[in-house]
Image (tube, rainbow, N blue to C red; front, side, top):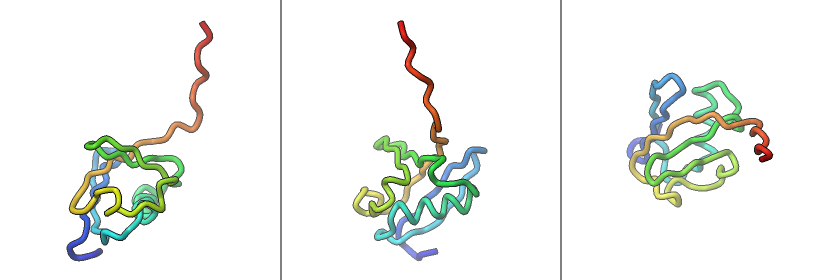
Length: 92
């Protein structure tokens, strides 16, 4: 844990929350590793969703720094399952 820095909270599937501080230079990769440890789930199976402005982060966003995303003080991110397979579009 880092004194000061960015306070991130994850809202998990069961509506519980976990919190941790990160330096502003931390990347989303660091956040996904933390979420992986909390969820015991492969990061490719979930996304982290910011409410406002509404943004959805996946592991492909990993190299982005928190400060470059404007996340500099605190943020709540909701863990959202990623669809593994999308249903085919209906043929009308």
